[in-house]
Length: 289
Image 1 (spheres, rainbow, N blue to C red):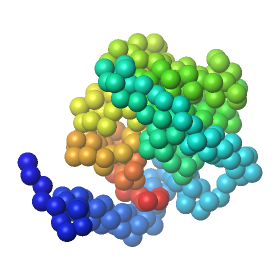
Image 2 (image 1 turned 45 degrees about the vertical axis):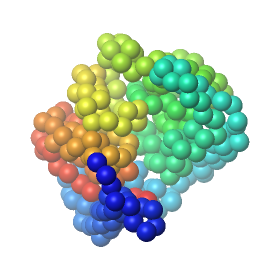
Image 3 (image 1 turned 60 degrees about the vertical axis):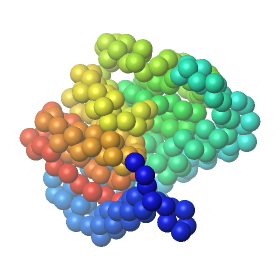
């Protein structure tokens, strides 16, 4: 399909996407107070914890302990952004290579969203977390630090296809956490996902950031519902990344098992609470660009 290019080299399709994005964000900003009041009125404990995390980020209302964690992780990010080590993609049958500094710059969780993950894990008192997409370990460091705030015994499981990134993240995790507190699963998701489903873990927080395609994202959700606790939070990254991800998000948030969903444009959150009678209640909240 040919896409017409404007005088500035930008396609009409891309300009339309940008305009639509800003309209969506403006709507969330204008309706923020209403959405917050609706959440408060429902008074579901898990939904309240997510809202608490959102408000902490929006108000920049961090404790000294929080700030210390953030500084540590961001210092790690700074070092990675100067790391010229080449990473190979042989596992994907590709001869391509990319430097760690470029992977970090392009694909690692931005600071504000890492802080949000930390607060979710902390406020939810999460004890068992699954992450699909380890990358360079930045989101993992934030999440592990949030878990450690409330527990001495906890388990963080993260999956990554690139072995060099697994080694990088493992070395960093070991500086702060006992080896018993985390597991890094290396391999193609098609080869390793079944073992995650069958290992008997019951997760209370799941961060899905590994494959930005419609069918795999839906499959992850359906399969992972088999291994969650009675109360669980799913966080999906980049729900507006492409048309397929938007379609996947629309299917997931109206799944019969979902009680609440929060569309934050960058992230999509669904809450499954088996003690809650309300179903498929959607919210739209803007936290940051």
